[in-house]
Length: 212
Image (cartoon, one colour):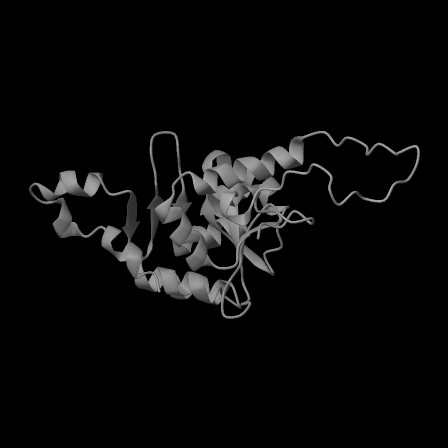
């Protein structure tokens, strides 16, 4: 399922000789979880997202498009527990407390750490065999596979989507003007609507603010 990301798994033999320079140029860095860690996560959250389980088993955990000042971390199984249940050092993280308030861990799990302490969440139950992905209540993708495939191909797509959603939440609401005389909608009115092909991911939002 996630075979396109397996090439970025870091193995000990890659850090010998001239291989190090090649590894450091990888756009993503993934690591294999300890054998006992994934069972702990599976026991802590029932049901557990099937796509996330498959990702841990096939690829692992780590970072995507990480550069200076950016995080973009797919949590390891142990961190998944600590973050969602606010254990150990996460217990005192006020930013995390605020983020968790946007989600219901009985339905979703924070699994991808963005910049500034924000997270993406994955639905714990499946819809048509997939686990949808959310950011602050807005659906970003119908599945983890779809999200990671898009993000792998275009590093700017996810950040631009997050920025767009945040701007929608902070912009002041302007009351709609009430027309003096009701008029039927003019079919020939000058309305410019971009075609589906011309729109980018961050603009694909329907009337209830769900990204489609």
